Length: 112
Image (cartoon, rainbow, N blue to C red):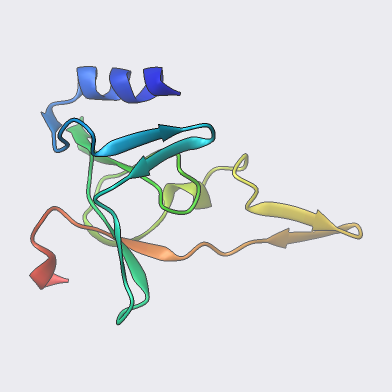
């Protein structure tokens, strides 16, 4: 798991984190900079790196590294990942678990 983050930082055009910002846990990562805005009922997530037109971030929902080519209100990358338990089967029926949107914030949050 740690190798994925190290590789991402190594290959990045820009890095937005400081040592200790990202915690490595058994099932992924936790970005200590992420906060939950109770008034708007949404996570405010900071990008980790910028590389080849994409902002990489730690998903507050699944703890994995995802990317987006835009900032602002977005659906999390795990909405596209079939391995993140978004697709569930119950009594032979397929259910798609809806993930909450996040705000991917580059520090200019006032514009959101």
